[in-house]
Length: 103
Image 1 (cartoon, one colour):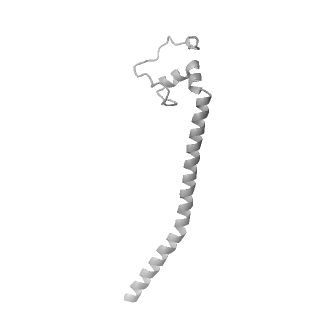
Image 2 (tube, rainbow, N blue to C red):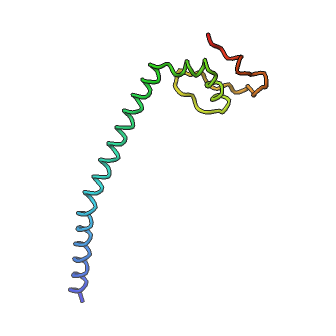
Image 3 (cartoon, rainbow, N blue to C red):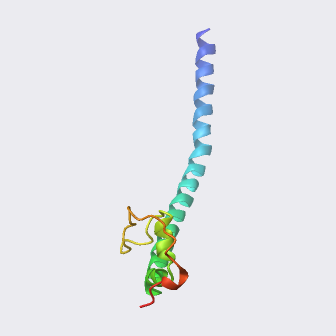
């Protein structure tokens, strides 16, 4: 009876160890893919931020009125240098395409 219990415990333990030997390489591969993806995303964010800053997209958005449209939609600002959304403004019918600032 004791021998049967010990045999079952040995088989269970060896199955556990074999499972770990199969899982650990896959887990490490998954973690390396996640880390590489995170690094690529961080690099893409930095490059995109610099490119948009160099192209002065925020200034273009202000001139065309797109920034005001985004503020009214209560979307988050595109960059830290963008002005915060106005909290008390309501959409009015007096705003027209010709009233956009160009200077």
